[in-house]
Image (cartoon, rainbow, N blue to C red; front, side, top):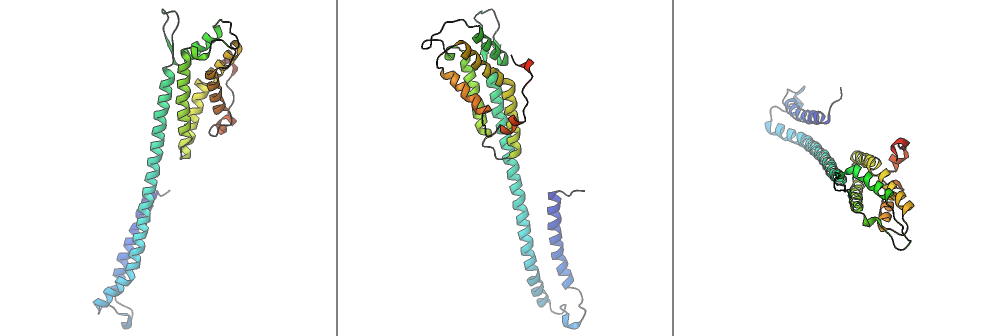
Length: 244
């Protein structure tokens, strides 16, 4: 049976105290020969016991101090890990909330507004269905669509969380956070953002700052990323039927 650290520390401490007590008892026992008898001289006994037990007590104090500091260090690490996890999930909930507040309003007021992933899909469809003749220098830009600002808000929130994960010290917490971020991107952002880029480039011409922001974000996450490489290396693309 495996002995936990707490019980082991108490066992060591108890053993040291017992040895100190045993040393006093031993020196009070009758000696084997008269030349070694100490019982007739209490002052001498006290002096000898003091000289012998002082180093033992000093060593015991050092060991107990080490145990205390070690336990304090472990408690600090656990507290730090807990704080990192709690902070991550607070930020992750903020990301989900930002995504779910993505609003798409139909031109037809009789239709109900769409939110979240459905709103994202409606915005992409709006871009696909948009009919216009645009010249190279004068044309409609992504920033002219109201939904664009929801997309940029989601990207900024994701990047803030991405940067926070990059600062985590605990490896276990960091891997958990990376996996959560990776899953969120794959499920809710990868296809959607790439669709915006593809649709815009196929229908509109000219430089667009919003498009550049979206493209830079995709490159940051799916390019030579310092925190997602190990996940993307082992990742298999989603089935074609899930990509529209």
